[in-house]
Image (cartoon, rainbow, N blue to C red; front, top):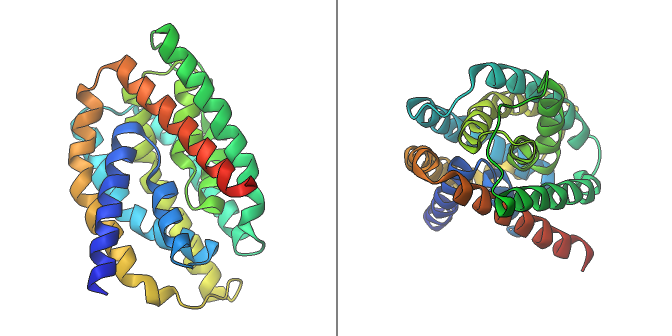
Amino acid sequence: MVSDFLLFAAVGFGAQLVDGALGMAYGVVSTTSLLAMGVSPANASASVHAAKVFTGAASALSHVAHKNISWRLLALLAAGGIVGGIAGTYLLTSIDGEKIKPFVVSWLGLMGLVILYRAWKGVRPKPFSWKSPLPLGVVGGFFDAVGGGGWGPVVTSTLLGSGADPRKAIGTTNAAEFFVASAVSAAFLSALLSGHWETEGLRDHLSSVLGLIAGGIVAAPLAGWMTKVLPIRALTWFVGVLVTGLAVWQAAVLFL
């Protein structure tokens, strides 16, 4: 139990450091680690989202303190994410979520290439031009719930691909994730209590979830500061490499 806690505290610290600084990867890294231990996709998603409620709150406060938030964008993304997350939870507790992964991987690869192109060309950030980010939040929340991680890769990648300021895109996406994680966790609990979802062994992974929470909370303040001080072009390069790398790695797991 203690060894699992320490291991996942390290995983949570590293994942939150990347997620808080670059706007993605906490769910992907954490869910993958749980799946490697034999946890089912639905149990892994439920566990990671429970951890995200706490790490997301810490990350959101850090980004607010460092003024990395666009409040209008936050409200619209969070509202859409809640709707999409609840829908994704219902689907995941009904069918095999593995069938959705190829679509997420394709989206990751496309967005990674767009971001790398912008970093290479040195395109300057511009105000986010979408009239309503609500549909983006719906899509991001849906894939996040189904895949156990996808909010950041879908939402942050799309915002950066459209030319949004990396600091605002990353900070706002992280802050909105708290609301999405809370809604998804509530939906999992509702599905469990209503009998729609029957799970076994979820309590066996409590120490791992607590480790993810502890490591993520410690890393959150540092991640917010990193987002504020890193050069925009370097930050864009980092995000592009990360997204593309995740896509290649996930594709290798799925198809090889």
